[in-house]
Length: 312
Image (spheres, rainbow, N blue to C red):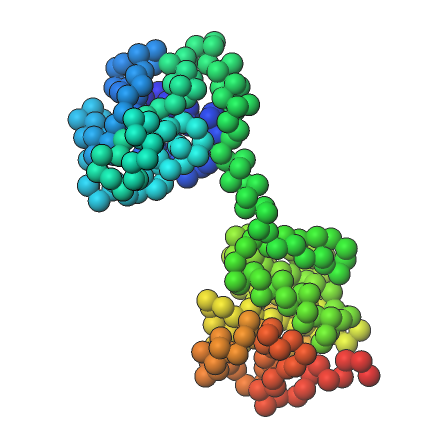
């Protein structure tokens, strides 16, 4: 392998997140320890170096030319994570020096340097183990922090789904937790998407029974519910960044659902009236609107009041 490939392998072994397992981060690491293509890893040096000098080193010894305006990317997307992981230390010669100072320098930590110097030897594994035990894996810390902010929702079948954080998924969670119990409590959840994981919850058997096609790039709305007793399919679009159930969208969905015989009810869900007002001109007639900030009420766009029959 080339030195860059080996640098990526070292970062991966040290528990760096995927976003730092790349050429930019590997070249930054090589520059920090003065490691040229033909240098043995045992000769890695601990030295202080500015980002400007990192760019010059990369250009001179690896032929990669980064523009000066790349310095901020290297600082925020590589060196910051190196610091968090215990691979690098900032301004070891003057810890009170401001980060944005032109004199700011970085250096490899003693623990990271021990791994780098032993790379490719039998002793490297032990050094890696000691590093991970002492510093932890940054990728694990990032994952733990991400999981802390996941939105948990109990599904009607007793299962638990966890939405990734974000305004759109918060609204989807409220559709299941607040809209469904109020207006269609007897429905089953057929499908729920997620901004990070499109097919977050899928009842494959029910989809097949209803003859609803679905793929990784499906065209279904964000939440699909089904009332077996009344043979009603409730199709709900959560409106934040994307638009509501417009006439065009409704035609597309009717094409997708052409083999499904259940009666369709279309709902555009909004987090608040402000978002609703932004899209009001694009909402299809004969559809429904639900606003999460006023969860007990519905707005009917000149269509049959489908949901008033619930509770009869």
